[in-house]
Length: 214
Image (cartoon, rainbow, N blue to C red; front, side, top):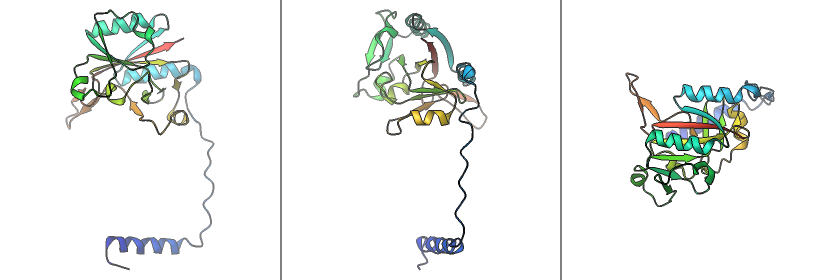
């Protein structure tokens, strides 16, 4: 055995192995805990409450009302440009005036170029009610991760019929760990030692979430 840190670690591990050599196997851990504490009837309302608690702006609409709502949110923001993922449903922006320039999700776009875009509209992979979290996985209706982190205004559409779960344990089996997952709980924010909150430091300053019912 050497006196190096590696040698010391080996001595410690050897003593531990010797001490537990005759110990019985650990009992099987029970897995009968609840997957969620939220009744199904409360999931969407709880998601809305927690999103608002994180200072996201929450809107509700149905499929027919979505284009007009997206157009209104862009107009209220004064957006002249909107970043569009490659397979964002065309109808979502069908009521947006032609004066608002649609910017495609270009893999070659630099962070500086993306910073000049006013808004971005995306879908999502999942939303988690108990934590007020949106999960994006860079699917074609969401685009690359950077387009949701650089522009200052993000409109995210969540289908309440099939994209909202109660808890993180319910979300994990539905997510692909090989994809670039982005977990968003409210607009980007941080605070200093005086607890002065500053928004928009490492992501959009304004997050608007549309809860879409079919």
